[in-house]
Length: 349
Image (cartoon, rainbow, N blue to C red):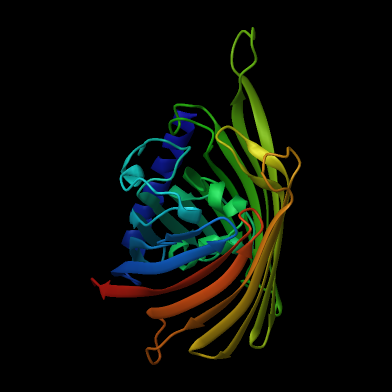
């Protein structure tokens, strides 16, 4: 398998050299520093807690050497308190850099080669799952209104993707092979994730559907060697665009992830967003999750809330002020969040 990956890398480097000789257009680079601060109290039946929500600091470095070659590097440097008041280890992001089972400070580190309708991607990337919940950047997500699938899936993995976009640019089909989130070390574990994804933009309808196979090691007492199992994850993401309205309806056959495998069940994610102007967004969002293994303390679990976003800078969305209120059935608690996110971008060339 290592020889296979090295062959792909050699091919991509050869195509890169050819593209640089053929075309010098599209040469640019920019880096963004994204900071977010949340103030996040919870009002439950037992006690009131206070967290920093999704407070975080990211950097995002992107660029292009030509119209055929681009790169992306996204780093996550700091996280506030983890979800629902549990103290986060401030050094956790900098441990386990070689682990595929946990998120570290390198979210994305990949290159794209583009020729005609074909795109070849190699490096650390997001597993090609479907669903519009994964469309938002991490620094824009309201973790208190995210599904267990989003919160527990180690989606950033090393591998390669081949994608083809139709001449109309309405449909994209992708095949991907990455390391498995069940492996201890990239490549050394021999565990892989295979994904097929379909995305489209058809006027008022934008689907993001996927099928992923996540290989895992199953321990069987007395077995002569490792026994490889496989979790099949199906995600059907649907988005409907109606003038100022955007409706999202996602479904997956997974209720979340434990350390060594997925939890079978059903997760439904829904969101209705209305943009009354360029500076305002208001939304209703909710999730419903049924765990077939009864791992959750409250099963089925659900949450629901209302969101308001305001962009005070004229003709720019760099600064976002946000607030939401929601209810979580697991904790029998209301959550209130107010905060801000700022994106400071520098153009390097």
